[in-house]
Amino acid sequence: MPILDWSSKYDLTGGQRAYVEGIWASSMKYRKSNGLFYWIGCIEFATTYVYTASSAAGPWTKRATINNCYYDVGLLIDDDDTLYVAFGNTNISVAQLSSDGFTQVKMQQVFASPSSIGTIEGSRFYKINGNYIILVTQPAGGEWALKSTTGPFGPYTSKSFVVGYGNPVPGGGTPHQGGIVDTPSGQWYYMGFVDSYPGGRIPVMGPVTWGSDGFPAFQTVNNAFGTSYPYPMGAHPLASHTGTDSFAGSSLGPEWEWNHNPDTTKFSVSNGLKLQTATVTADLYSARNTLTRRILGPTSTATIILDYSSMHDGDRAGLAMLRDQSSWIGVRRDNGTVRLTRVSNINMDTNWNTSNTGSEIASGPTLPTSGRVWLRVGADIRPSTSSHAAVFGYSTDGNTFVTLGSTFTMDTSWQFFMGYRFAILNYATSALGGSVTVDSFTLSTP
Image (cartoon, rainbow, N blue to C red; front, side, top):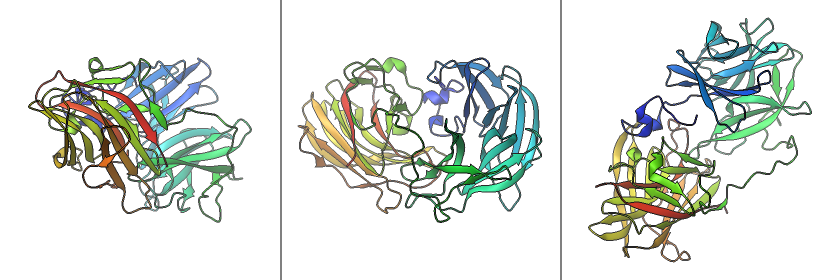
C-alpha cells in the first residue's frame, strides 16, 4: 500500500493509530489470465482493500473496497481462474469474488474450530492435487491443515501439521502463521515464523511431503523441528543489510520503514538524509517522520553520523530503540546550548497509548553550536538470554565511543509483536523550523 489513507491517525495528526490496528495479515497472488498481481487485506476489522499491479514491485493501484473484513485472508486463484478467499478467527469462512476480484459473490462459513484445537486464524488457501487446503495457525502454538475434497466451500476435515515439534530457535516460540511453497523441481516447503522477542518474529523453513490422505506432512528431525535443513535452491544474491548507507540517491532504500505516513515535505535524500522537524510534541510516539530499520539478530549495532548544525531551540534528535518501551540517545538544543542526552522510561500502555513520555537518565557534554556527532546503539535480541540489553554511546571524533546512561533492557511482551527497531528521530518541543542531516547509517554484526 503506497499510503495508509483511510484515517488521519496514520499521519499522527489525530492520535497514535500507527502503532496498532492497521493492516492485518494479507495475501498476494499472481493471476496469469490478466497478468496482474493481486493484493488483498483487511483494515481495522472493518474493510477489505484490493490492490493490483503488473509487477510485484509496483506501482500498486487501489481497485476496490469491500465492506467486509477478510481477517487474516488467504487468496486462492482456482484452476478455472475463479478467485476465492479464506479468512476468519476460529470460525473460518470462504468467499467467492467476482471475475475481476473486486466484489464478493458468495460467502459461507466452512469450518468451526473444536474446543480441542481452540482459536485459529491466519488462513492460507491452496488447491493441491485436486484438494482444497487451508492452513490455519493456532496462535502461537502451531499450524493445522484443513482439507476439502469436494470444493472450496467444503466440508473440511482437519489434521495437525506443525504442532508439538518445538522450535529451532533457542528461547523462541513455536513456528506458526505460515504457508507452503513449491520449488520449480517440485519440492515443498513450509515457511512460518517464531515469536523471538525482543527482536520480533523471525522466519523459519522446513521440507514438506504429501501423505496418501492428501494432507501435508512436515519433515521433522528426531520428531522435532530441525535446526537446519538442506537449502532448496541455488544462490540468489541479495544486497546485504549490513554496511553503510550514505543516502547517496534521491530516495530511501526498501529496508527503511516509516512507523506512520511521513510528511514528505519534511525530509529529503541527497548525499545524506535531511530531516526537518515535522511535529511539535514532547512525546516520541507522536513525532512524525521517525525513520526505522529492523534490528538484525542475534546481535547488531547501529551507528549514525548526525549533523546537528541546523537544530533550533527545543529540538530533539537522535537514535532510539523503539517499541512499547523505548530509549534514545541524542542531541538536545535549549536556549542556544547544545548537549548530548540519554532519555529513557518512554512507555506505552497495553492499549498502545503513551503512558510516559520519558525522562533524562544521563546528561552528556555540551557540544559546539554546530557540528557532527556519532551516535551508536548495540542490541542483543537473542530470546535465549535474560539480559536483552541495549547499550547507548556517542563519539565526537568517530573513533572513541563513550557509553552514556545505563544499559536498557528491552521488553519481551508479545502484545507488541513487531519487535524492536532502530529509529532515527527528530522532533520539536517548541516550534517547527529546525532540521538535522544524517550523513550515514551503519549497521554491523559481530
